[in-house]
Length: 384
Ligand SMILES: C[S@@+](CC[C@H](N)C(=O)[O-])C[C@H]1O[C@@H](n2cnc3c(N)ncnc32)[C@H](O)[C@@H]1O
Image (tube, rainbow, N blue to C red; front, side, top):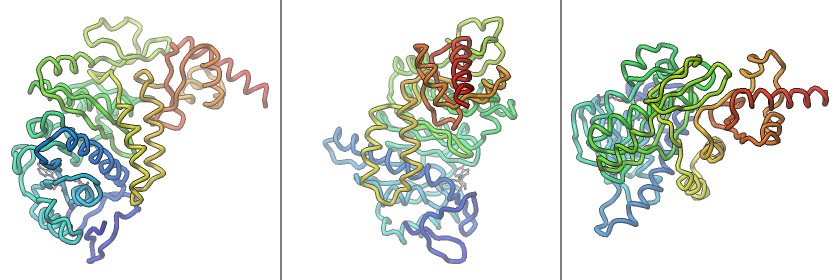
């Protein structure tokens, strides 16, 4: 893709990090993985849509906060299924740039640039995939996005307000997401789950059910794709998957029912948040299979993320970190592989997760984890 850049330099998606301005309009090359994944997910959903429909209506994407149109143009150009994209921004300079980028990339007919305030308007009509990629929190845009998205569609949310979602500043998390954040090891997963929880509750007010099919925490943001189904009963079922994340005095972490009494020895609690699966395994396999057809995508980070998502897909919510357990027990941590071997030898599950190189998921309780950890640390000592 050729995207208009400052000083008139047409360029492909640049690899350098950090947000900047393209002729006064926001552009962040560090969001490449986010947009790469968008191409794959949109294609998978557009194909399902095409297989279901008999009238040939193309899959319609609504990019509510489109800035340069980087995502919109890429979807129109790279998705191998019929799609049309509405690219909205309230900034007239952004809308002019979207038009220009669509023209430069020969997708003028499939990218419609519109100017409007996404918090209020439905300029451009309803869509099968609504993308919300704001500065900071998507919370102010949830109602519009839910009213815009069609049944069986997808809602894609990005949040960059990590200091709120990770509890560095709890007040904005309470205000925007009506949730208590989790700060410390495990916070990025709770951030994703709080975002999903807030979206599920917002949708339920419209009798719409949301279910995450792919979610990730990458660099400075979290992102989730939520499958949309209309219906009050379905919405009730989605809301019933919300819970409270707790850490007990013995270190056990789990998500408990939202209405359950908080145990007296709880040392940490967060939520309400989504307690169900973060991914749909069938979609993940589909995306992995599609990667081979897209030479332009930056494969390494994408395949790494998809394989970690696949591993963690069936694991329980919340995770631990090897280093934090070492600090807790005051001992040198074993390798993660050594700990995994000990956990499995003790009859527990152990899986890697996208939420950190040192992070892992297990069905062991805190005391069971301690036992396996000590066994692994002893083995490591013998080997030294
Ligand atoms: C983070 S940028 C979007 C990045 C873009 N999705 C991409 O992939 O490059 C946020 C954009 O939202 C626009 N924006 C902010 N508030 C808005 C609103 N209420 N309605 C429409 N656009 C808005 C800004 O002008 C800005 O261009």
